[in-house]
Amino acid sequence: MKMPNGIRYFNKRYLNRLTARIAHSSWGPFCIIFHIGRRSGRPYETPIIAFPTADGFVIALTYGPEVDWYRNICASGRCKIQWHGKVYELWKIEPLEPKTALTYLPRFFRMVLGLVGLRDYVKMVGQSPRSA
Image (tube, rainbow, N blue to C red; front, top):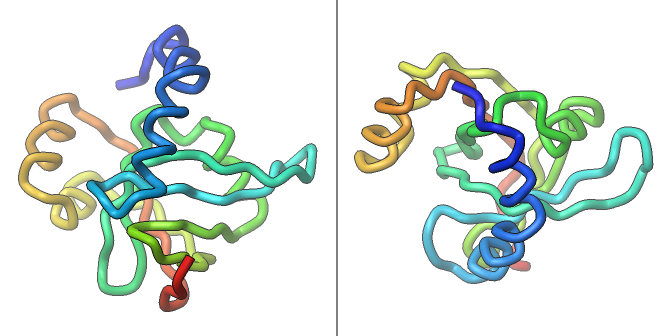
C-alpha cells in the first residue's frame, strides 16, 4: 500500500512540524532521524516513528522505500536517531519481511500496520546511545 502524494505533501509540509516537537520529547514512538542529503550534502532532521530493539530500531516505511530520508540513509550507509532524549548512531540497514518486523512492534501498531497491509520495514543497528 502506498500513501497518496497529497497526503505525503501535507505531512511533510505541516504535520512533520508537530511530530518533530513531540519527537524531541521522551513521549511515544516518535523520534528524529538525522541524515545527509545524497545530492545536496545538507543535513536534515526528519520526524519518524521507530521501535527500539536490543541492538537498534525497527522502522515501518509507511510511505515506502522511495522517501528522501530513507534514500539518503541508504546512500550514506549511516544516520543518527534521537529517541527519548538519547542519540544513537546507526550504520547497518537491513530490510525486514513484514512477519518478522511486526514481532518487534507493540500490539496496537502490529494490529494497525497489519490491517493496512504495510509491506516495507527496515531494521537499523548501531552503537549504544549517548545523551542528547
